[in-house]
Image (cartoon, rainbow, N blue to C red; front, top):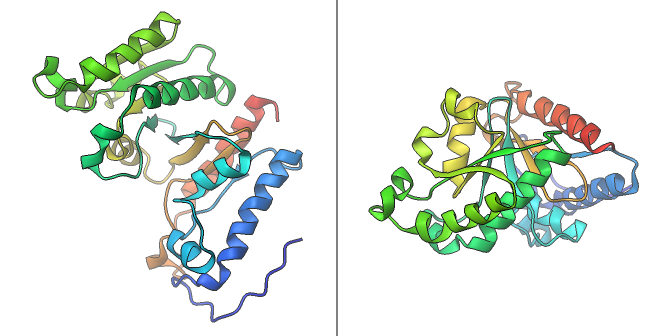
Length: 257
């Protein structure tokens, strides 16, 4: 059992960096349990990254990167999943102005391959259908609004389609997420954070789940942060946590865990 001497006053809504190492150690213990087979999946709660950095020198941007390091995995992929929509961003927590430079053919291919494999192993979809958004408005409109679709995205998609993957795109992002369009794919690949998260949080704000793909174990998390502003008031909605627990169980069952 992990034991830590927590000090300081506990105040709802105010993170205490004194507790940081205990939080980090509990995450590591959770990974140990799933890797040892003592648990079928890992479902993490939200963490306060600044408190972990200030209290224990936490060197990772968040859960996802720390879990990848613990698992010895070089690259993982973030999926936001809900009943109406699954979406995966290729680039995540970077300024919008840096997105074009951060997009690479290698990164896009890696994201698509991990998503495709996870839909089979974790979601029991035998023949996944993917829809890939363009970067620019109207997917570049034939090069008049940008050439990333022509020079970077389309060649990757053509190569993967030649291998037998069912992929549509690059598509105009503004017409990808209405009900009729969503019926045509099992997951959408977006080029940047808000392009992915705005539609899924609009459709399933209280029931979205953050899933880390590419780990050797199942990991889910609520699709929200620590919500310090409502701590201790008894008004928090547990819907996303419940959805994360249920999805973890379904994914573990699909893997045969």
